Length: 160
Image 1 (cartoon, helix red, strand yellow):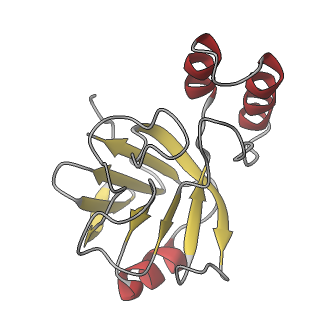
Image 2 (spheres, helix red, strand yellow):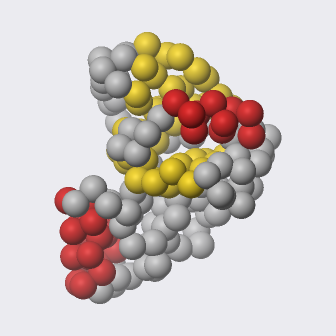
Image 3 (cartoon, helix red, strand yellow):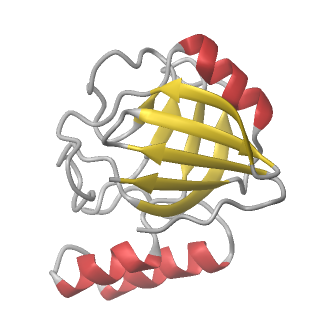
């Protein structure tokens, strides 16, 4: 999956294979962080409980200063493309697909209570192993830096 780094604004690039996150400002890397992933990190997230971290082009949908994992940035997973696959495989209903699509178009948090899973966050509490249920984990000091830098709407690309 080729990645285009925007020349303006903030951008987060996660590379699952190397367990690295690069944070860009106006096209230049300003931070690199080690990360932990889901307990079964290979491949794209398919359903709730699979332990995989999704792959694709997402954005920060919410900032949570009261996370049980220090601080967190919620991503807009699942996307309409995830919902289309889920619907085709019978994992979600047509109504759930439409709700996910509507949330995406309105730039709102998608429903996180479907069989596709949800609540995919970038959060603190440790990057030394793959221990999350699909989230991206940072050390708390790194999460504090990231949380202070980015806003809702910041693009996040997650690569294999």
